Length: 115
Length: 112
Image 1 (cartoon, each protein chain N blue to C red):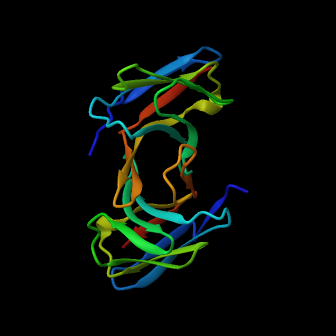
Image 2 (tube, rainbow over the protein chains, first blue to last red; image 1 turned 90 degrees about the vertical axis):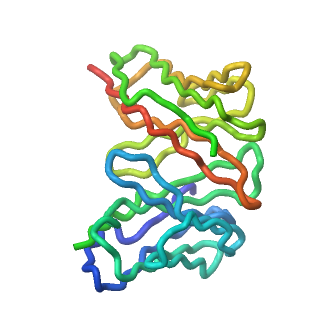
């Protein structure tokens, strides 16, 4: 099973709402990632978790708050977002070591619209 | 960060080979070269990767220049299902882990 599951698939929220995106994998991967993708652009890395600890934060605004409650689950908590935050949010996972066979597996994403 | 450069778009006829180029002149010695593709409304899908030697798998071949400053993804016989955005990516070490540095992607159109 090489599946990364993201829920919900679509989300519409107002600028005062609080919502969460969820990502789950059961491949035994100990590294998990959040990316943001705007239309017709490549994905941009937001956060990296390695062994449930945040290892990379690419200067993401604090209105995005990641959480890794266990090795299979990754959340992204959203609060007071702006319309320009509307995008496809992708989750990925991989083995945590930097070996030759280390590749990332991506979920299908959550398409977020902020009104 | 190292950077990759790809053509914005390419076209191919169905059942013909496709060569997708990528320049990565600032690549460092430990950076792997990965290729992913993304179909509409889906996440990126792994295609192939390599470090120095050419690589083959059931989906494609990857040809890496001897100086590693460029690479080419080869689809041997394009089908309509291969129409997608293809990303050339460098996997670079960072803060005890590593990150993917995505290129801008090449949109491949396959003509029937």
